[in-house]
Image (cartoon, rainbow, N blue to C red):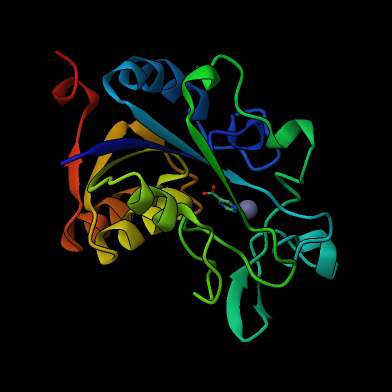
Length: 205
Ligand code: VGL
Ligand code: ZN
């Protein structure tokens, strides 16, 4: 058994003042920083879109929150966010970035979104996260980050699907809640898929 802590998209644009704000998104920082010393492997994902990405409402001159068909799959329209090398794409201030042992970028293809840290939404391209974890002999993943109802959820579902023992540290995650119960639904889905939902206190001695 070898464990890794996964930090999903802890980036400025998902902080409460960011382009795609997650309420209380910054409140996970002290929780994640407390968890980090418990782990030898700390892997971060970054949402890393080219400008004019297909998930941006501005690209299609349409409304945020509306849906379009993007290369054959339904895609919700987001504000421009996490554009490569922008301030919004940087890790949220205060996160212990020195402890991060590996970073994976996702959402780099203009015509497909990538909520999961493992695959794009079409499941055509791999980010390299699974290969990295496997190469390190990691069997168990502990997932934290933003947002519970999008990237955390899809990362956790893929992790289970790929055969990793998967824990979601719920107090180290926050969600968008486009609909008020999206985070509750996401937690139920992750649990039903075989993820174990825990709180950070269960990992701290
Ligand atoms: C995310 C929406 C769009 C996330 C990324 O990190 O959860 N959500 N892009
Ligand atoms: Zn995105």
